[in-house]
Length: 288
Image 1: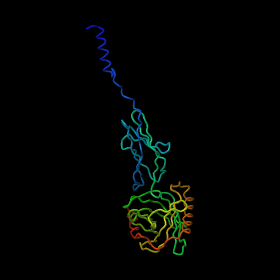
Image 2: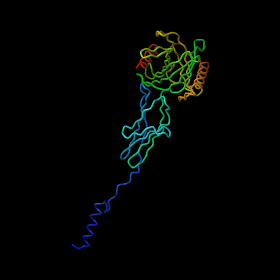
Image 3: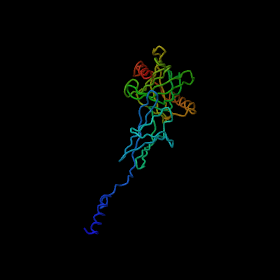
């Protein structure tokens, strides 16, 4: 064989082995992963799990969870999750997903929102349109009831002689809007100050704020139903204020509830839902 022919064949073999001879080398990976955040229902310890659904045309290597600019944790194994206490600051979460080439995809900002969360004022009105008690509550957590998610919070009356937990949501049936203000909660028993229900089981509005307008029945320590009153509730904030601002927020909400109660007549003709059913449903939830 002539030397020139041997050299040509050798060069051709080298080009073929190296991917030459017209073949296209693999393209660089420039596609960033996509990622979105979702959350679980708050558990009995008020923990919520954030899950990042991350996908890539090749492989996601890790996901970082942030709150604002603060790195919370890094997860390298799917499903990518982060657990947080729902009573902690609950806004401005994001997730960043990485692939092996270093491409980064960032989720939209995600906020943890619980049902009816925020600050509400409340007032009980008798048949002569006299306000017999008033106060405010802050809903900051949630519980999963038989009929759906129910908000959980704490209330206090103006005189500060009554304070305890409060539930708000579908206690007596699907698509109902019920409330239960407890007087005491122990590991085995629950007693109530009053239970109530919105007249049409849907939020109303007053001066641009969400309202509950219906009836409430007080309950004694033995569980006996006492007096039925009109119930006025108004939401003055959809966020949970920091501890230092809660007293002022409650005072504003309480004042707004009194304004609502005096501006519109409150019914005292009883509730569509059986108060005993409301009481028993709330007891079951709080003693799980």
